[in-house]
Amino acid sequence: MKTIIYILLVVMLSGVFIPNHPKQKTQPAQTVTLQSTTPNTNATQLNQSAGIIKKRLLAVGLNHFILVPDPAQATLTVRFENPKDSQRAGELLTAKGHLAFAETVDRSEVLSQLAKSDRLFSLMDIPAADAKSIAADVLGYVKPSNVEAVNAYLTTASWVQKLSGEMQFVWGNVPNDKHLMVLYILKQPEALTGSAVSEASVIDGQSSVQITFNEAGRQTWQELTRRNIGKPLAMVIDNRVYFAPVVRDEIKGGKSNITGNFTRDELTRLAALINNGELPVGFRLVK
Image (cartoon, rainbow, N blue to C red):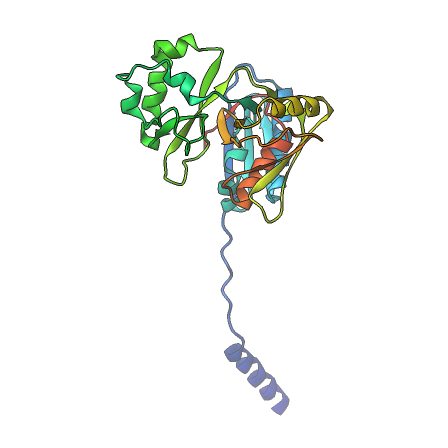
């Protein structure tokens, strides 16, 4: 009888002293759908796109997701186990990933086409042609809210149409340290594309990425840097300038370190875009 009482006491005391930990709530998975914006997208293109996007996500450390193509709807569905991963994925899901290197145009060439009363001067801050503290390939600066107004002007201005095929105006990918968008002047056509690049790697301890050119691109890059010593060369992804460094010397050997004001995470994402190629079709995020 005493044994039974002792057992009951132990059970009762256990119930008192053993803490009751509430079960942690697991966050529901996050599903996003990518709709192709390219007419007549086929199953092969969807599968190729799925493979490229998968490699991009894995390259930045996102491992827990399921990616399913649907050729009937021309969509890709991505299910992230962690909802925060869908936010981290960001532009890696929809960026086309078209990489190009372009020669630049001196601002003075454009200003020579403009009358002092031209409307563009009221839309953006345009430095003087001989402003030494401003990179020669920069046409000017504008608040992000005024970008569309400048774009609308550039599509209708007669002097811009005359220069079509010779040069183009391309925005920087993000605002500068003064929170202004930068408009660059680039030569057309592109001097090199992503097909000339074999690898992009982030350099430890530096805000730079190393670009390694393949055999086909190595000689072209050497010639390109030789004839542009003292001038900026632009690296462009999806019609946005990411870097526009001034060439100091002819670059031999097929490797270039390109430095900019980027965090390591931003450079890792940039390398993920470059290393995994261009999507065969375009996509937009629908949910």
